Picture 1 (cartoon, rainbow, N blue to C red):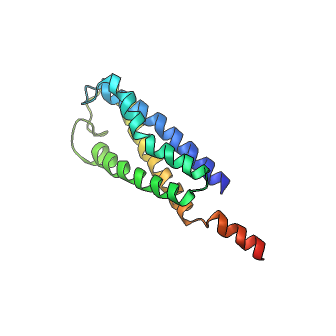
Picture 2: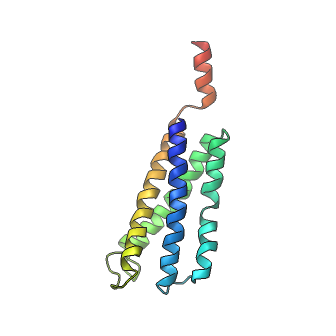
Picture 3: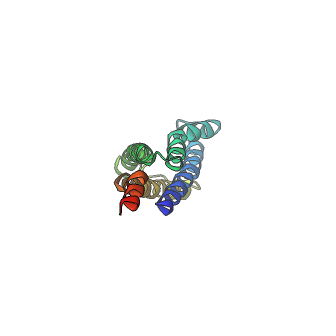
Length: 141
């Protein structure tokens, strides 16, 4: 289980960095956010995942797994739709070419990959037996 916790933690931290990068690129693309707002929005977007990581390491792994799953399914659906399916200027396949096109495309793809991986890790965390149950099984047997 410890490896899964480490893996989930690294994914959440990596996702946090990619969110910041993605929002910086969006802000430079004349988006609805300004560059000085990117750090604030990235921080707000990562509060719940960071709380979930703390819960994960303090023994509340089911709560942490549930928070992570819910929190990462939502941006996966919204970002997946917005950047890959919906027609518009922030669709990775329809963007006007420019110096920020590739960074935007790479950050959008990385976000989807990290969100899928965190959802997978969350499901594994939720399906894993409780550490208390594992200890009882060892003591009984």
